[in-house]
Length: 352
Length: 188
Image 1 (tube, rainbow over the protein chains, first blue to last red):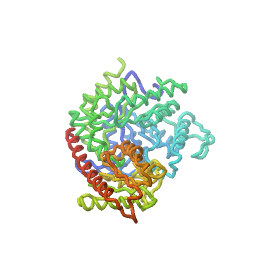
Image 2 (cartoon, rainbow over the protein chains, first blue to last red):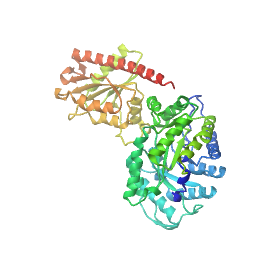
Image 3 (cartoon, chains in turn orange, purple):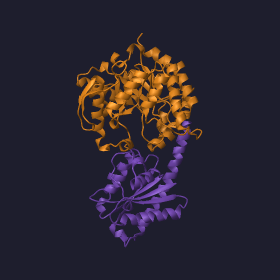
């Protein structure tokens, strides 16, 4: 785990991610301007750092109701505004970008942040980005595989010789600047299904797995499949980190958390996904066995520890700002994380 | 209440004739309901390519969004080669998984042969269940002999469609109340 800058002795890492969504707060009907949203994301990262959160990440989504399409630019601002928190993407849509350019950007952010930067590369959930950036959705799978491979190669080799289908060949190409420590942790983002987890295992790269809702035990199958696939290809799963990502919201009581957060998720998903989030599933999400970390601080601690026992993962990444959550609530959540959740999670997961 | 009356074929006139009558019944008996007739013969709908339904354009987007916006969908279909036509299956394929959650669906079948009677039971209902619709269990099965020059000439069929519309509206209202009561019980 050393290679990926993770110290198992310190226990489960706690991170935060934002997709940079730019939605109306359903409680007030107000939508802040984009300039404020981006400011608040940078502020959010600073608060997370002060609270002792380990990782802060920003995703790109090229559709209406989002603001961080240029997520590397936002990450550069965060790199400048923070000192010790690790930062990264969640995720970078490598399929529709040039891996050379992505590496240049992240290596630069890594220099600005003095070696705190990571890349999480994913595949996009929408066709819009393919049209916008001039790619054919029919190449969805191969675009990702080829470009992800090239990204990994650039990370390993300072002088790159490469040829493929979707980019001009590279002949003795030097991709510069090199990162602060000469190398970046690069994760593969996967949806919940075992099929995509297996691909990450075959590649022997760390896996970032998104979990919206449902029993944790179902997601365990994907994590097991990932480790098994890695083992089959000769990698040691004990050296490959797993990060889980999903909804997070803490309030005084679980009922209060459900009440405050549900309208954000429901209304936000209606606009960005075309479907709301069923209240029944959200209510079930409060159960300790469900992956959705919404509830009282105590309930969330129990859930995270239950997930840790089940998954044996190295990092959990919380999404608490989706759907126009106002900044005072984000501040409140960070405060609860700092004072109640982090101390308990570290106490029970760190090696003594 | 938004009721979408979907005529699922680009071929022939019998399904459309039956759906016209269903719309007429809704207008007469439930003037407060908003009935939208979607006749797939009138739209240029592309085949599903797996994208989110909001990302289609033109007629395809209109058809997908209209169905997604409905409280109830009355599905009209002919039977071709012992199955539903590709045009209708494509509408299902355009929509997300569980697209019919919290919606009521009912069925009107027109067929050239009584041998097709169970196709609604064996092929349409499993799709609707998978997509999480609340299904009106009884459907209306209409044969060629029930039509004459684009009119339904069998009173029994007219009565059955009247009942189907009534059941669709009743189940939609009732289901909305059940859902309201259930959601209120969660207390958030």
